[in-house]
Length: 130
Image (cartoon, rainbow, N blue to C red):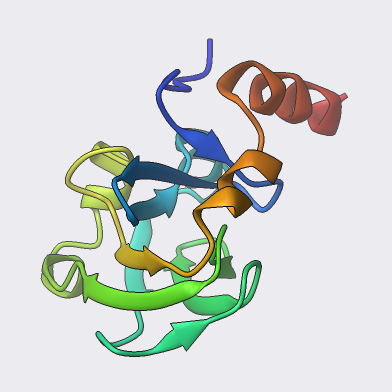
C-alpha cells in the first residue's frame, strides 16, 4: 500500500504540500520517488524566487530519468532544502520528512483547496497504473 499521509495535499504532478499557516512545505510523493528510483541529484530554486501554481521550480535526477518538479501553489520560496545537494537519497528514504524540497510563502492559500486529498491522490495513482 502506498504511503500517502492524510494531513497533506497532493498534485497530479506527484508533489505534496503541508500547510503551516501561510507557508507550505513541498516535496515529491512516495509514489513519485518510487517510480523514479534512486535519486542522484536535486535541483532547487533559491529563496526569494517566485512561482505561479503548477510552474516548474526544479528537477529531480534519478538513475532512470530527469523529472521536473512543480509548485502546487503560487508564492515565494522562503527556503530550499540545501541538504539534498549532498544527500539526494533523503528523497527516497523520507519523502515526507527529511526529503522535503522547498518552503513557499503562499500568495493565495485557497489554492490548496483545488489539490487532491490523500484519498483522491490514492485513487489517482491507482487509475494511472491501470
